[in-house]
Image 1: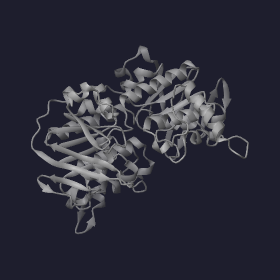
Image 2 (image 1 turned 135 degrees about the horizontal axis):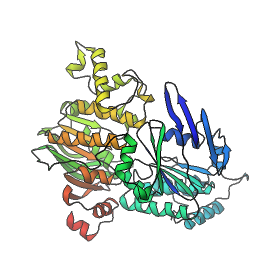
Image 3 (image 1 turned 135 degrees about the vertical axis):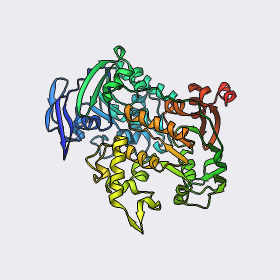
Image 4 (image 1 turned 120 degrees about the vertical axis):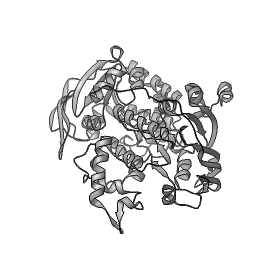
Amino acid sequence: MRDVVKRFPGVIANDGVNLAVRTGEIHALLGENGAGKSTLMNLLFGLYNPDEGEILINGKSVHFHNTRQAVEAGLGMVHQHFMLIPRFTVAENVILGNEGPDSILDRAAASRRVAELATSYGLNVDPDAKVGDLPVSMRQRVEILRALYQGSRILILDEPTALLTPQEVDDLYVILRRLRVDGGTIIFITHKLREVANVSDRVTVIRRGKTIGTRVTSETTSQELAELMVGREVLLRVDRPPATPGETILDGEDLRCTGAHHQETLNVASIQLRRGEILGVCGVEGNGQSELVEVLSGLRKPDSGTLTIKGQDVLGENATGFRQAGVSYIPEDRHGRGLVLDFPLWENALLGNTERPEFTKRGWIRSGWIRELTSSLMARFDVRAPSASTPARSLSGGNQQKLIIARELQRDPDILLAIQPTRGLDVGAIEFVHRSLVETRDSGKAVLLLSFDLDEIMDLSDRIVVLSEGRIVGEFKGSTADRAQLGLLMGGRPSEPAMAAA
């Protein structure tokens, strides 16, 4: 990609970017939120057309007008949010759109072809399994398998480890290295510097729409890459003094929730939050985390159990009552629960705060004051947007997340529920969020941190609980937690040392 430029109204997303990826290498792509990484990959995959510059595949200049042309040229893309149909089998998802010219589909033959391809690349996926029944790691393999079935030799992976356990991440690395040995080329988008070091051959850093540089991974350091990303020195390790836990401020006992098909999604979970402590909750997605957070934030009433905040029973309260009791909530789904995308930023800063007297006066919203507050929060939290009147939809995902975090911390809560608070953030923003969580803890607040990033859990938590199949299956002091033991418990495969530690 040579001198690639892409403009949007009021924004130059890519400003003369250069990216050269070699055949048979794993190439990491790093950059801040809004640096232009996703736009660049969307240009490569035919979702956008560049305004200037040139794209060459195997030395030949190409002009993709749609993704079909990109696929025909040998490109494949695995998005962070999987593009699969849960009710279809693995084989049906893999061949979808590539069924062939015959009017009658030979499903048995298609399953055999998919099984042979899966075996040859060590993907180990049952072609006849329903995708909706598969764990996250297997669904990811289905996405990779579909790209390979389409003939992709250049594979773009967008944050591929976000929802995986440590063991599943290691398995993914094995698959990627095998693809590389077979001559495949992989572009690996990630904000995790540990992954760059573990799996990539070279890395290109983009900052503010421009190429900053390309490095051979073995010849650089995480510190150098972090500084290239944000343009300043970055503290990669969390500066976290020992905690001094105080009284229990939230106490949940024997909480149970039942799903739509009468299966128990949260099964006799008991949890306590203490002032001056960060409690980390780790586990693989779909093991009761969503139900637990919904109960603790007032969005769902459990089928049974007890829940008190500051000694008061809150099970009869709704989400507004929980917020008035001192609970702030950074949701995982920033679009569905964190923002109204068509609202300007200042109206999004108002969400959940309409009952607070400083936001209203005699029943009227203090819009001028809220605009000023939003502008100050944007400056403090580095939310990059033209003004407080900018629609939330026009911000990058990372800047949307920073706005939510700013709004929730501005409330000075007694309890902060931080769910995937750094998902999609760059290292500079992550440093800021981590420091904010520690400062919240040190001011005598209780913090619950739920993250699928095990490094984040281990770096920040004073106490860690593991959630599996709706149950809390282990508890560790943060300083004694072992990565392998936590990973085994998360995956439902406890070892004797793990159980002993728990």
